Length: 107
Image 1 (cartoon, rainbow, N blue to C red):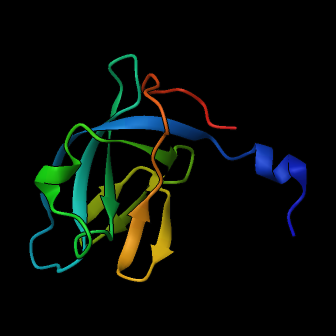
Image 2: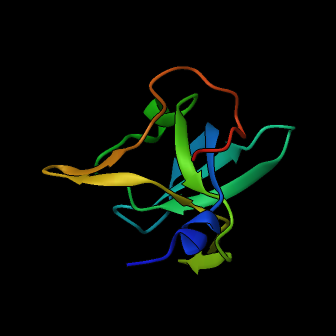
Image 3: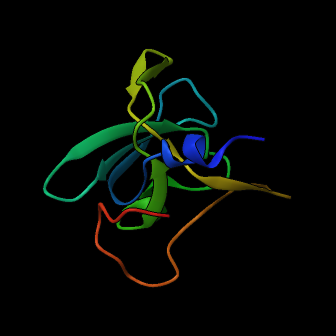
């Protein structure tokens, strides 16, 4: 178990996917360009390519962990991590039930 203070360290945000493309030489990695609000953009590399087509992700709002240290996957920098559930047929993205501004905090 983690403490509530540790949980509060997570910076969960609603973001909008503005670009998405498959990562070359990978079956499951997708490169996402996301908008965190206030015109701030970041790149996230996610292992969702077997469950989602890149063109279907554009415009979708998702939840990310925004304060993770950057990590490199197949030579590409990932500046956060999206939240997804493990479904029978692969990952299922967590999305807001109603429309909310990009950059909104999740608590």
